[in-house]
Image (cartoon, rainbow over all chains, first blue to last red):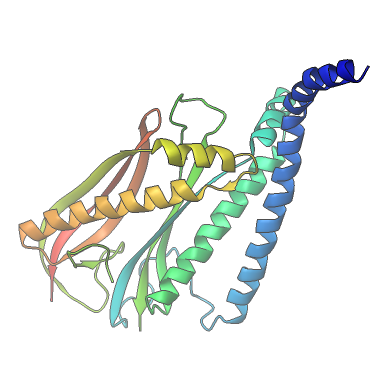
Length: 164
Length: 111
């Protein structure tokens, strides 16, 4: 009796793990990404509180450049990607179209995080303001095949930091 | 302050703030093609179970981008320039698992 149970467990166990994996990965992804987003929101709040100059991030290239003493080139990048489970369910979602929420979330996180890191880098180099910010996005594919499910997105931000 | 051994005035605006451009030397470029280390790729694969930031890739791309910048700076210095203005970065996937990191700018002499 117990031997048949063990045999059944050996058959059903791996099968269940395989079938449940997308769900687990989806749930873990949701949980983990919400957590890192909350951390980011906290950091952004702190950054906002310590802000002196309201015009600290600018995409314009001409303002305030004349009065600066020195400058530095800043560049930061970050690679982000949704979890495997999220990609799996996105495939179903894309049959009907509409908003792909998990991709949205991860991309928003990446873009905000890269801007935060740009500000941190500027601060560590002693810059007081950041000008001519440029944001670029590119897809980094997996090593084995081009349209693998493990593609990730790279965000690059570069700018000129001014030291007044 | 700048990555690597060569140090130049660099910016992605049309001038070097606080300096005057006296000579222009034209376009300088730097590029590097990198692919991922197998072990790092494996770890990134594990990280993909939860998603979010893939730190291994971030580090690798940063390293490679610094190398591309370094090559551009070396080229500018060999021309006799002491600064690079209007720097732009570009990234492209050239083959499966490999990316090209490219940067370009205008080499100048500033005072």
